[in-house]
Image (cartoon, rainbow, N blue to C red; front, side, top):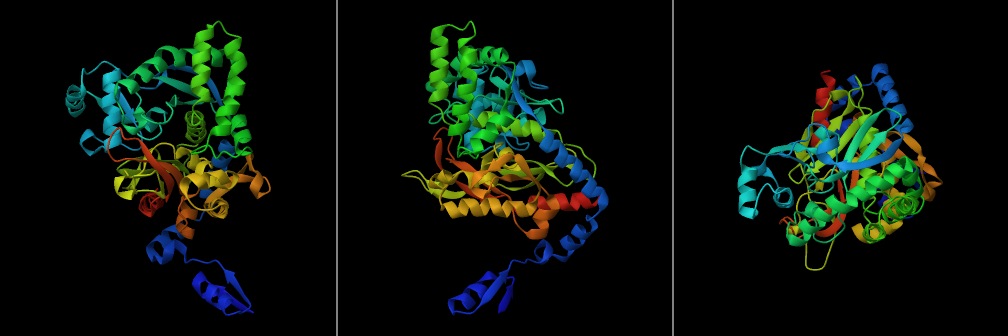
Length: 455
């Protein structure tokens, strides 16, 4: 019997020659970086373990509930008529990528703050508009993530810990603001969402007394969703849950018909509910002293950033990368924008790429095989603190999703968090051109570890 430790290629060669061998997975701590290994050793303490345990308990006990739908300016903290929220970490207009610039222009036109594209660009370049990350306002947004004052937002409350999170309503696929489109069709849809869809959803949600999103996510996972790129089951479950409350309200028949048809025709509708559910869950662990749990991962199309519970609200950044995946006909990697969006909050909470084992159909969209999807999930158990038994994965014997990314474990194992994501064209308005996967960059985790060692 030959025992191979470390490089798998040696083991593969032995097996190819018929040798009786066992492979032992092993990597040197911190990838062999002696300074990082020393820092990791310093962070091996009962105080950190205790803080992480408290964070894990808060995550597992969270109860995100959809409470209402209101215009952003009425509920989002520090929102003004001249505030434009965006995905990812802070960024100024001149550094914004194409899709985000297009979404900003569209929002300014939609709000009536500019008459045309040229005027919108001029206003965006001025100092009159307050650009700010969604995350800084307890909100999240997919892709460009733009939220302006009159846009209706879902209000999700973590009823265990009394904190709230917000997200716009998903527009559907095709030409949409989140990919930077802002033509007449897009603006007309946004106006209908403000004037009809949002208020109707608000009436139905209030009639329901609140919709438990944790229960819907749990059910969706067992029906083949991973609640990031695949939301067909979640959308159906939500529609089934909300339908009696549409019918039991005073809404007119045409409004109900239009709203139900819109939700039914948009299989990604539930994404904008799973995201604030995850945000409300993870915001409950912010600011826990000595805690090494990652509380957010986000991208703005230029930078990738993480936040860590014990490091307040500081961002630790690396350049955003282009996902590897499948492209729609006529497009390739050269057309792709680096990754963007707040939707990686799902992975941070143990969904999305971390739950791909339960959604084998997703590999047809992002590339790879069913075994790859299962492998990604199994790998994520190596860098997380717990398993969320509320989110059981049938394909893994109903094991809970890997939950609670530990900064220390990431650097100790060298395993980077996996994210599955849509791929946006680098030019504003073209839209989604594919889907794929990528790993969170190592650099931001190294920076966070150094900062943690100084606390």
